[in-house]
Image 1 (tube, each protein chain N blue to C red):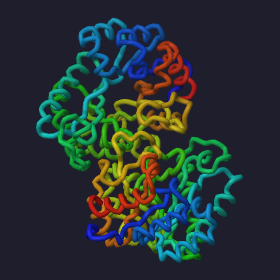
Image 2 (cartoon, rainbow over the protein chains, first blue to last red):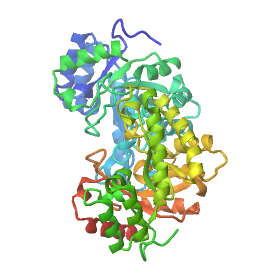
Image 3 (cartoon, rainbow over the protein chains, first blue to last red):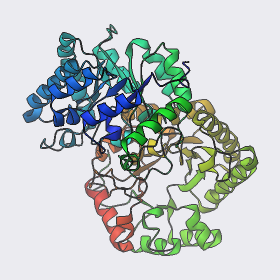
Image 4 (cartoon, rainbow over the protein chains, first blue to last red):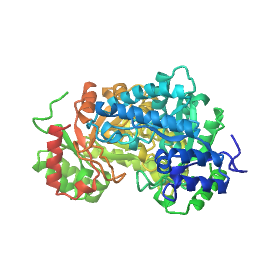
Length: 287
Length: 287
């Protein structure tokens, strides 16, 4: 297990963590001030400044991208299928332009939430089948672009509206089915916020293996959690045994970034520099 | 699959659904007015009127009990272990006195939430091991009292503070380990609110089998869910495919009650008779 206490070279900032405090350009500038080496930007943040300006800012700052958020939202009715496919191909292209290490996939829930305007359905199994088919199709495109796809299992409380893949087991079942050869082009983004509760977590991390562990995201689970979407905790403020999970991930041979991704009204209300400093300090002390 | 549309003989009311509107005695009276044949009362509601009065009210009304809520909250530190054990034995005794078909177990999360005052811990695996040991110990007592124990997997959003058993797979693993002979004395309370999202749900219902399917609870998952604890939906108002799940449960040979359990600020704010009428109408039409 790596010693993270000496510096923050393995810290990556998911830019949603400070999305209320400034534009992507301002976030990149702040990263330069704090000696941050990597980020994981969101598509809406990139779109807001323009892809070209985003690419230039990232290159000028010498930043790596520990991922690009996000592709997915696959389930939809027939009328939205082409849009969903094209939208995901554009996400792959943007990830390539930005030099991301992988495209994070938040796979979507029921069609009416995943692609608004789609006919409503309660058939979660059908949505899960659509996800499998759509990832297989996107993977063909992603292979051509040499952009790995990282399925992110989301917490089950998001099953209806954000992602109907909610466990490492399910995500790895999809990897086995779609990429049985373990080509390295399809894997997992493991976010502890979504998965910490799972009694199979450690077994499934072991099953995942190095070649499928494409990204590792951390924050903390607060008790009580007052908002299902925007009350994630800063590492150390909640109940997740983060070092144990990091040890298991690194045991696989994972030596990539530890990405901090917080959606939090509380942390969005504080100055960007304070949030980044706190992330760095916590990564060094409690992660 | 049974036809529930003709009458409500298989409807059971979990009394938490109307706990703000009246005492257990008043709820029992309302059940008589509505021709309800079964309830599942909570320990605090029984304690508020006294066990003796509760037993008399239930008997006088000719009500069956589709369960008794609840034993559990097992994880604790050494100083609270005797209390936790004795408390659970009393729950078994009360269930026997009331003539319940089973004691529902909400197993508890981390010790500081499960048994307040316990030393804080982030070790969820240790809590899960305590749960296994405590259920095994309680089962010895329950066998003597001839009171089946029903492990209720709770939604993963309650893993820290209410139950660290969050999937049918985990609950059935515990059953296999503690009662490999499938004696009928240890099984599952399947509540769709907690389990509807699970991509393994139907596989695990099949694995469960008739002898371990001790209770079946329904309500609905709302989108958005505005409160993690008290925003459950009335059947039909959310996204859960309840008939499909009921069909799978009855395919096992389950022929017991369909219990409605809602924690909802909205439904608690309405008159008791209106809530019970609505439960009955929905069970007949969308369950």
